[in-house]
Length: 165
Image: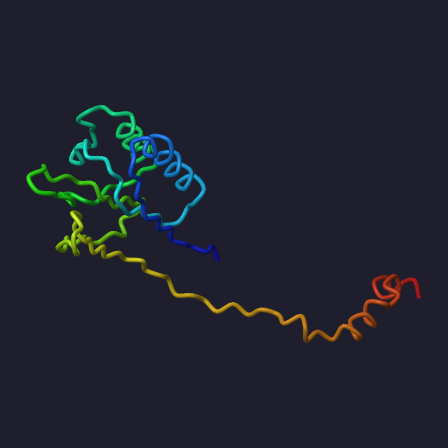
């Protein structure tokens, strides 16, 4: 039976340099090495991506690299309304939920907590687990090794070739 695992990672990258140098390579590495259900969640800090058509409004390298990583790894971005708003600033989608499987069923935007300018997201996923089969395993510590040695010490040429006797 092949084991299935789920990989969840929460992001917060606070600088363009981190986005450029760390984000896309990390997503590519995880998607290449991990073959289970994968979900990336967090504040990706990219406000110049139009998520309806996966394009960058500023053509910044960090945004273009992120879009490329998402497309190359067949990920879906599930957030479709702004997750951050401060004062008179234009609200943006900064908090993302990326997955490689259709197990994200619903995302509910809740109000902010405390002084945060980000909404709280409730992410409902279907991590259905197939019936786990019980596997019988031998307890080698209870083996009768003295009798096994005795059995194996037979003259196997006579046992396997009865015509010789």
